[in-house]
Image (cartoon, rainbow, N blue to C red):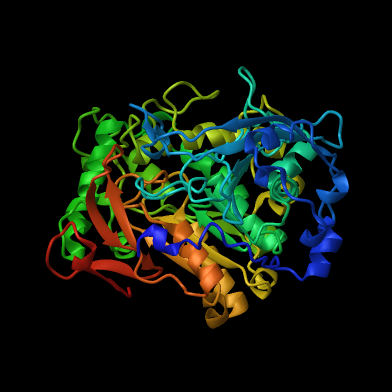
Length: 585
């Protein structure tokens, strides 16, 4: 179904209550009935003047907080009206999607801050974009990495097809935040974690606070409350989405969580373990990465019936591929950079990456290990960037070092910053000396804040919420099995049938963290909205691989299979989704 068929008319004005009962929402957030509201400033004859009148508007702290949270007041620092602009595509960017600025409608752009309670903490910055033609809904965007950058809400939804209009162009109010700290040159992006309020904001508190501020601004702008609120996020933003479903189940009606870093503490310790395995002779340079990638394809590519350089049945390949078959004769340690084999230390490094990390005690929600990584896509090229796969995330273009050096992979950079700042609270300590035992009390404290692994989503389900999770099986930034194991935990806790009433979990074989390597693009927001508002669950969704420039030609498509199913080739055009069927393991 084309995206436009999924949209309700922009002129539809019937108020639909938020998911939570009105009394609960009013008590928690102080929301007033829309019937007592005056005409909104954006619905007046002069939308530009109405927009600009919002500069300096304040939202009282009582309307921002949720039970258990404290907050200062919010202030709109700038309010600028922007005329409609056409689609724009840059030559290069960190990801293909980042090169695309979708067409934008006429809208009011509000930028402001929520004051901290601790005078030493930074404010929570936010941006709210108000379209002149509003569809009565909002989309709040999650962040990425360690945040610290204001998400402007003007981009495409994570993983959206490039030819899909952005949410703002579809009539949604869009919302973003920096989660309560700002990155500055010369300062570690993890330094904010040394302040308790800033850490709590990053962990969970900033997102419902900004949500409440945006609701108040929508009421002021349009004279009525939003009918539906959606949250979309990838990576850290995916964690934020699941955090909302777990901690603040009344906040959003629909949540899309893509490649979420939910088992956060396990991930950070795994980053350091994986990096430490590549010190000395264990580093895998570009030649070794390609060697492993080619061997995996030779063993597993055609097992699904199609030799298309995608390992579709990743689970079978993960169980069956043995990296020791690449060991140099005698485990030679002096294998040259172009040798067609791996030395013993390199083999151990690969085995480390694919093995779980077990903790000596339980983390939040009873978890005791972080899963190993998957298989396929080790040498994935990343259009718009230098590399993907292992070289972007695990091995880098230079061996890991302390402190991290240019060319070190993201896993090592992130882990070697996170352990000292979040757990040891000593920025100068060698991350390899930090163990789960040595900082156990702090590990438990941070895990309770950061790990979004609570399997009880009963509150979210009871309010009619819908959740879609998408994992990329060749993701080397975070293990896709962390999210898949979480989904299994939800099913065990709530029962498979009940979980399926409100949650769908999909996997994309051969796709890297940022969506490269195989078909990865799909209109999840449209599917989510249809599910929330029409009670029609997603069916027969397709992944597309597109050129990142107009006319956004489609190279190939695949069915988007619900986990644990995988796409098996059944004959026909190998580039067409219709030639594949989703089958059980």
